[in-house]
Image 1 (cartoon, rainbow, N blue to C red):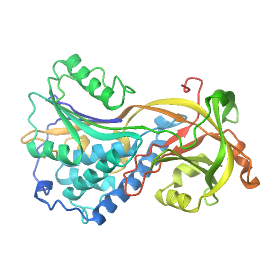
Image 2 (cartoon, rainbow, N blue to C red):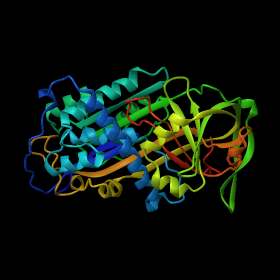
Image 3 (cartoon, rainbow, N blue to C red):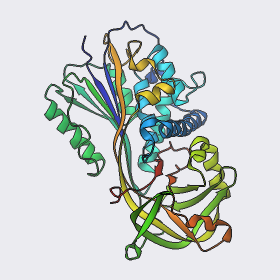
Image 4 (cartoon, rainbow, N blue to C red):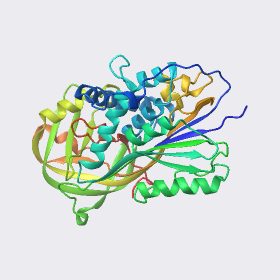
Length: 410
């Protein structure tokens, strides 16, 4: 029996769910509509903490994956969390338990209703509390022949800010154009072609997206941008367009993992952390939310001459193997139980993909003027960056292990 694909893009990412050959049992999951709409701060804190921890576990898996070796890594962890949490609304039995466990949600302390309502609060904050250009949410495109449960769609609408559309996936070009037009609008034209060739057996596309455009609190003067060389490794150097900014910036040196940290704020509640480790592998294998908390607490202002090469990244990752390694196994095969999405349908996830993420971001080398202890930051070496979230926000920060190439600059 052919699978009818249900796809989810996370922005960016896609999970493809299709009809399978297995028998689906039924395990009752509490309907969010039946829960008290007042969500305790403890539940929000638990979901937020789980989101943060998941983002670092996912990064470590991506960094260790064979397909990532020697490549830049860029992704939006909050988009992955949102998409998988939205999928869990329709999951039942072991499939549901594996999704929540993989995301770090304690099933004893957090019901599905708690998770849904927490994301509603967090996504609402992301969309309304910042003066920066930021938007986050989901969209679901449903084939005319596919009839999801109304309560599933309503939860996605209320808790995950999902827009809903009916399309005819047998008309592959027309339906792809509908999806691409929506994504182009939500990303201010930065992503104009999310999908190309669609499977005509597709029954649903679920998209999770986040768009952020920030302005530096201390702008870089474009007249100071000059060509310089970046050392990819001890044998490879590439030319880059290096921006320059001199001023006082918060900084910290973590002796435990031998990593220098520089804090670059935007004009509102968001900021960027630039990490320059002595050894990238050590940083990738050990970094956790506790490190970021420590850095932000103990940073001190110092004067820096900051050099930041301009570049863009367009990335795409298939997450099936990574998520399987993180314990989310049943959703990909005949054991999948997604009966909460549609009654009487045999559904299974065929693909999870982070794709078409475009980042106009900056690599960084630092030339220190004070203090002498940190003169090591003059080296032009691969580094990692992340954008820490405001208090109680999901980890909207994207993380990258950056080495520029001749084609990576904007």
